[in-house]
Structures are given as C-alpha cells and as structure tokens.
Image (tube, rainbow, N blue to C red):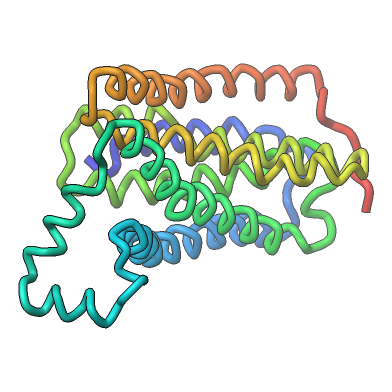
Length: 258
C-alpha cells in the first residue's frame, strides 16, 4: 500500500517542474533537493518517537523526581501504563496535549528540517532566480518527503488510509506555502514574509495533526478531526489549480533580490 500515492507524487513533480522547462535548475540542483528530503524523513523518523516520549514523561511529572519515577517503574512496569491512561481527564485536555505533541514531533520538527534542507540546497547560485523558483524548490522537498512518508506509513496499512494520505498531499501544500512566502521575502526584502514561510506551515501542520489524533476522544473531536483531514485534501485540490494559474499567467516570474 505504500506506493499507492506514487502516481499522485509523479503528477505533482510534473506540475512543479513544468515551470522549469525554460530555465532548469543548475546541474544536480534537483538531486540536492530530493536528497535533502531523504535526510529529513530519516531524521524525523528517528526523533519523533523520543520527542513524543519526552512530552509524555513531562505530563506524568516524571522529571520532578526522575530517580523516584524510575524506581517505581522498575518495581511495577504497569505503573507507566496507568499513568498515561489517566493523563487526559477531559477531551479538551487531550486535544491540548495532542497539539503540543504534534507541534514538537511533527510541525516544528518536520517543517524545520524541510526548511533547512531546502535552504541548504538552494544556496548554489542560479537555484532561485525568481519567486516561482522558490515555490518549486520548497515544493519538491515537500513532495519527496511525502512520497517517502507515505511508503513508510503505508507498509502494513489498509488501502483506504493509504489512499487518503496520498490524496491529502499535505507536505506538497506546506512546501508551496513555504516557498511562496520565502520567495516573497526574497522579492520584497521584508523579513515578515520570511517568518511566515516557517510559521504558517508549522502552525497548520501542528493544529491539523493534533486535532486528527484526538478523533476517538469524543463525538465533537471526531467531527473536528474529520474536518481537519478534509482540510488537507481541500488544500491540495485548491493548490494545484493555483499553481497552474501562476504558471499560465507567469504571476510569480519575478526576479528575486540576491
């Protein structure tokens, strides 16, 4: 099931790279972007679980008396399970901590890694000549990250979940948003756009994932979680024609400042 999203990823690659037909990336430029995404998925996969565990330990109060907490776990391993089961007294508390967890283990971690990887890849002169080049570069990192993530999560998963993940194309959307604002920063020189390039994807990613993760808490959470899932699909569906429009009208074919 992991490769069910491959046709969608290939379409998104084609969509973005058609902007570069007349002025392709410098030699190995595209390769650097894709390799950067590979490093991102590898690092985030390794770090996400420890980060989530640290947040859980913080919530249980383990760090107040860590040695005592370890001793209690050694004497009765079931204590940790009991602690974690009693953490969320209300759906609101569960939602709050789910968003906090997703902020550190998904939003900040993954978007931060992708941002750094793309910035590193586009350092070479000629990689980003126009505002549209910025959108393409960040989107390529996002598409590659998403393709690899779908393969990982699709292993052992069911068909419907794999299909919905592929249709959502969230990292493609995050990449376009990041590239749009970073490109606007390079065009205008206004640092506020540079900040938005990072903040908007992180906030959207953290909120949506956090709300989706608490769908089983209550009926209201289920509705909100489903709405968040749908928002990813809607955002992807809307982003595709927007990119087509930019390409057709050459809206973002504006030279950036060095």
